[in-house]
Image (tube, rainbow, N blue to C red; front, side):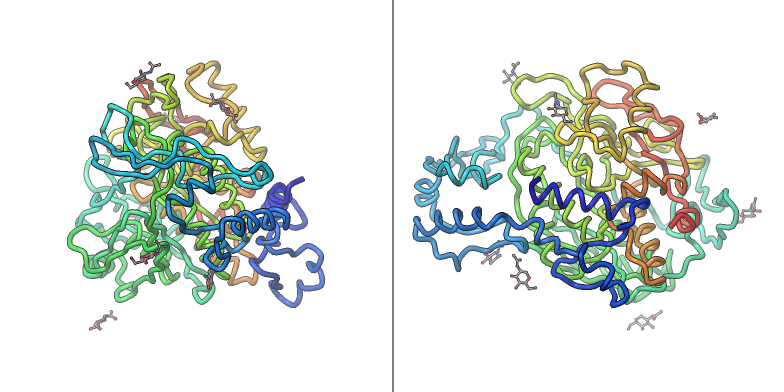
Amino acid sequence: MSRFLILVDRLYKISDPNHQDYGLHLSKEFAFLSPLFALLTYCKFREVDDFARPHSNALDMFNQWLHAHSIDSGSVTLSSAQDWATFTVPVSQAEVMLNSEFHIYHHQTSGRRVIRTLEYSLPGLLTEYIDTIQPTTYFGSGTSENDIGNPLKKRRSGAQSSAASKSSLSSSGSAPNVSSCLFEDDFYLWTPACLSSLYHFDTYIPQATDQNALGVVSYAGDCQNMDDLQAFFKEYKPDAINSSFTVEIVNNGTYGTDCQGEGTLDVEHADSLSYPTPIVVYAVGGEPPFIPDSLSPDDTNEPYLDWVMYVLNQTNPPQTFSTSYADDEQSVPPDYAIRVCNSFAQLGARGVSLLFGSGDAGVGGGSCLSNDGTNQTRFQPLFPASCPFVTTVGGTVGFPEEASGVAPGSQFTTGGGFSNYFSRPSYQSSVVMQYLEAQGTLYPGLFNTSGRAYPDVAAQGNSLHTIEAAVVALLNDYLISEGRPPLGFLNPWLYEKGYQGLNDISNGSNPGCGTNGFTAGIGWDPLTGFGTPNFELLQTLL
Ligand SMILES: *[C@@H]1O[C@H](CO)[C@@H](O)[C@H](O)[C@H]1NC(C)=O
Ligand SMILES: *[C@@H]1O[C@H](CO)[C@@H](O)[C@H](O)[C@H]1NC(C)=O
Ligand SMILES: *[C@@H]1O[C@H](CO)[C@@H](O)[C@H](O)[C@H]1NC(C)=O
Ligand SMILES: *[C@@H]1O[C@H](CO)[C@@H](O)[C@H](O)[C@H]1NC(C)=O
Ligand SMILES: *[C@@H]1O[C@H](CO)[C@@H](O)[C@H](O)[C@H]1NC(C)=O
Ligand SMILES: *[C@@H]1O[C@H](CO)[C@@H](O)[C@H](O)[C@H]1NC(C)=O
Ligand SMILES: *[C@@H]1O[C@H](CO)[C@@H](O)[C@H](O)[C@H]1NC(C)=O
């Protein structure tokens, strides 16, 4: 068994509430959680880096290769687990090292120029150790005729206006009283106070804010106007006035705090829902490899690998992360997607919960044509939503909540579906099989019935992944304040136990690709997963 499979095996054990090792997260470097556990866990505790570290043969071969090409190993940056190396060489040298010929390719429409090669090769002994080299053969130049841009990754913001309904609701009992959140007709205005009533965390007071934190990941050079943030607090969360967030710059990312106009709703939600839990914004720069399709003719994909490598190198990253970005899975080269997803598993083993949005275009946006040259119509799953090691959040609308889609008041359509890259993990196999059996032979050939199915859970509206992440951060706060480990990789717990603390959403559909999409139902479905959180119930299940 490869070390990575051993790590995944370990990840599933420590994330399974019925396993004796539940919660025994691994540390980056060897460290005991507490002296009390030290003896007990001595034999079980290992470093994550240890599992991910390549065999010494691999590093030897790699170093010999560098040496043979007179590259000083001091100029090579290795990732924390030494499983990813970054170095700069002239194109002429890359051509020699990869036995290839690089050219400058010019994309006519966008004017973008990229340096790529059509093929490359490595010395035979090295190939078995190297997963991927970039930039090499993946192009960011559009080969698709359908230049419609990518609405999925554009954060929806500005929906919440100043029309606040001041509420002092309490969340006793099972049905939340959100009558004061009704804005007009059947349109609800989900202010922070209304969301905390809806999901039953309005009476919870965070205790572990010296240890717990919530991370918000930004790839697009976003910004948050400080005056806007304070105005938001003044209107919706007066006790948070004058609080702020910290920014970590990753890979030369940009994040401004003196921008004009709309800030990002994610930070406002993260801050006001989990206050006074510290918020850390990760501003990530870089361009990942990419395969164009109709939805993303140009490379607007996110450099997830740069982010995850950075966080894996941190000793104490935030316990919970919210990320709103999603790309068509087929536009992400499979080796890159697998590499990123496996790195998310490493973070999960460290006790970090990762929440991603499921997208806002139903079962697929764009033309839904496959980009492998055959032009077949297929539902288009999104990545990282499709990675089995993250928790994916679908969208709801209104009250009582429905899957966001064709329902009145729906501003977007919840993404949901089945991966073509990642097979279905065992934690979800029985509920997904139940769903598929209940549907009969729906949409044959349009989606992959053996793939990882998503979303896992759901929340209201625009900033749904951040709302869900805030709830998880508060659950982690509760656990940490009790001296217990945080939730870590959520899904095995969610599918075994946590689902009982979620409100099942059984109405709605998510049209796309010229179909009505999937239909919500009783239990898990590929629109809202198991449903939306009830903090108080989830707390009792811990
Ligand atoms: C890891 O972090 C240390 C300091 O915390 C830094 O010196 C080092 O460059 C980082 N390594 C990578 C690969 O980012
Ligand atoms: C719900 O709250 C409103 C005030 O916001 C109150 O007038 C109403 O009586 C409450 N309804 C119930 C059923 O408690
Ligand atoms: C916020 O900071 C400003 C400027 O320092 C200060 O005048 C104001 O009193 C503070 N408000 C609160 C609620 O702490
Ligand atoms: C960041 O920008 C600086 C200055 O432009 C440059 O020297 C450096 O190589 C960049 N780092 C990365 C990781 O791109
Ligand atoms: C697929 O679509 C592209 C772009 O319209 C076209 O160039 C190509 O010929 C099509 N391929 C097939 C097999 O139809
Ligand atoms: C369906 O998903 C599996 C992984 O579960 C994958 O191996 C297979 O290639 C996928 N099929 C298609 C047509 O993408
Ligand atoms: C939603 O689903 C429930 C249970 O399946 C059903 O009783 C109810 O009538 C549905 N509501 C709407 C608006 O379709």
